[in-house]
Length: 228
Ligand code: DC
Image (cartoon, rainbow, N blue to C red; front, side, top):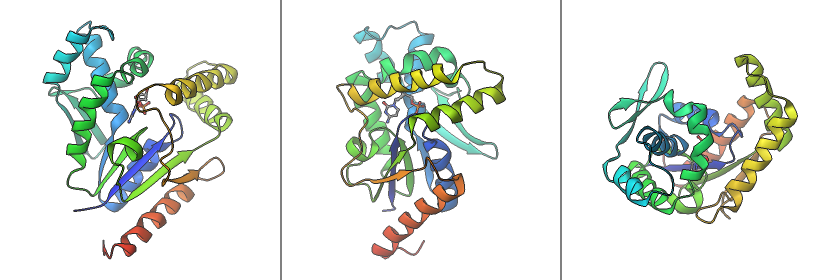
């Protein structure tokens, strides 16, 4: 069985970019579990099923199929056979996903799917509760941290590039609000697993973060006598 690398941390900590690159370098499968919560949310929005509609949610979960596919341009996300790579990143989904991610039945179903995807190992799975709940025995557990101010600064610059007009203060306030929601929710709140290695990338370049993570993974491989 191959290695399981769990990467957790808050939104905007640059987890996805780092996780993707690490998976590419190791030739591992990359799973973005946030995208899976986004798929459930999109499905519910499309079907006009409210977060409090238990029967409606049960029906969604019974039939849901989420797939990831890699191509030259990156990873594509398929929901029930349809390419939703862009649709899961819209503002409607952004606004609602945290509410859906707090529903126990949804978390249970996605846990099953995530554990199934990781069964063979050689996987980098990224999210909020991978090292704590999904794969508590993962070979490598990383917790990515970035100061809230730095996250706000990065988001502000990304927004400028995209032509989105939002003040730094407003972005910082959103980040703080999200932190509270994610760390204080009842089921599977975001927290660092006790045995996770914390990586604070506030003052690191992207390359430095990658180098640090690859070194950690290689050390684990050496410890396990794995060559590649
Ligand atoms: O990483 P992201 O912003 O795409 O995640 C979308 C939402 O899903 C966000 O509200 C956090 C939640 N999430 C979660 O609760 N557990 C995970 N393992 C991954 C994401």
